Image (cartoon, rainbow, N blue to C red; front, side):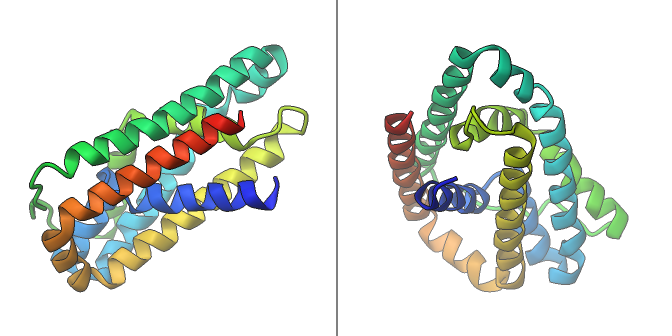
Amino acid sequence: MENQTLLTYILTCVIAAGTPGPGTISVIVYSAMVGWRKTLPVIFGVQAGMFAMAVLALSGVSATLTTSPKLFIALQYLGAGYIAYLGVMSLLASRQSEQFEATMRDKGNWQNFNHGMIVTFASPKTLLFFTSFFPLFMDSEKAVLPQISWLLFILLFCTLMVHLIYCFFMNKMTDIFKKYNQQFNFSVGIIFLLLALYMAWGI
């Protein structure tokens, strides 16, 4: 992977991890309610859920690459389209006034870990994310498994770092999100749309 492509991928992973979704919202709410120590199992649960979803979603990628190059290109365009979709959703969310609801309670480390996994599995977009997003940054002429392993490691690491930042600085972040929620979603939407255009242009 070229350095410019790698930086683009890392930036996309960081933005995706930072954009409020089921896992990120869980980390934010748990941090605000029960503190960072009891939120760590939720974060690790999200990591485990993402890894399991990646294994399920990417189990057929190797066969796809070797049997149908056209389908591989189609998956790349699908990935760019999905990034654009996230951008549009963020722009639409910027027009709404969304509030965080404290609906979760600490139920122990194991239950918190399970919650992190469940919210990851509960989102069908996760499967689409892995199957359509990874091919954008893969070379069809190189071995598939090392590329998938490297991309997955980077994604999990970026997600872990972003969630830890949310977790440890939640008191400050909560005020920022409540005050600048619309501006944040609008900025994320524009960034995703620009990334989608860049990805589609490079196919």
